[in-house]
Length: 272
Image 1 (cartoon, one colour):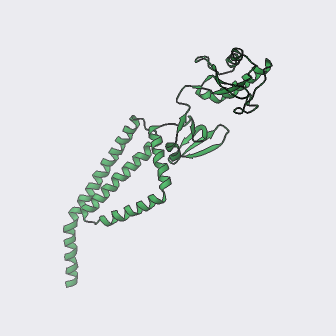
Image 2 (tube, helix red, strand yellow):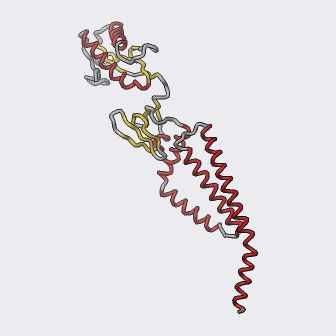
Image 3 (cartoon, helix red, strand yellow):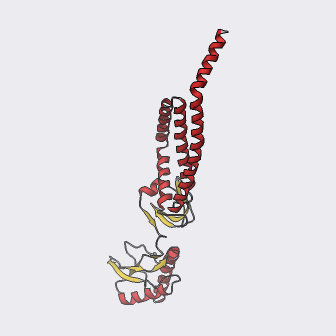
């Protein structure tokens, strides 16, 4: 009987000691979760107003909500009297170990967040990342997917994109197309210039404003290398690139002008 009374006293003492703390912790959790949900909604609206990509907004909102709720739960556990120091230390150690194991992936993840927030490029843009050039098919958290001009799918780690130079060919409406044309020394530059400009004027999608330009780049051992610079809309860049070479080759052939070559320009470059 004394044992039962002893246990009843212990239980009563614990109820008296912990019931107010438990109730307070529950109330804190109830109110805290509601406040956090409102903060997350407010954060989503703020991210939308600031122009952050809709692909990353839900992830950032979920991450913010998770962190705030974890802090709230730890605070409530501390109020009840649960020792959280050891648990937090173990969790931190586990997180450190996981971070080391996933160092490369975490770098790609952080780079993906930067890309989605600051938007150096977006889906549909024509970009050059490292040695890869193509249209951005998708910007993922860890990778950027490119559809290259030769119809291949290239997956570029986001850290590689952030740590290197990115050339976004779609940020400007008009692009200059850089071509090289070898001219025989025996030919007159003014005549060749007129032929090339006329060929460019007849090439579809070559812009006349800004006007195409032809100039002497250098004097090579076998020929004079000309810089030929037509302009095109960004989406027509590669079409104009190849069409211009084709038009130039045709115009030179019709006038009996041989395609010269040099050590810097391979024979047969014109008309590829």
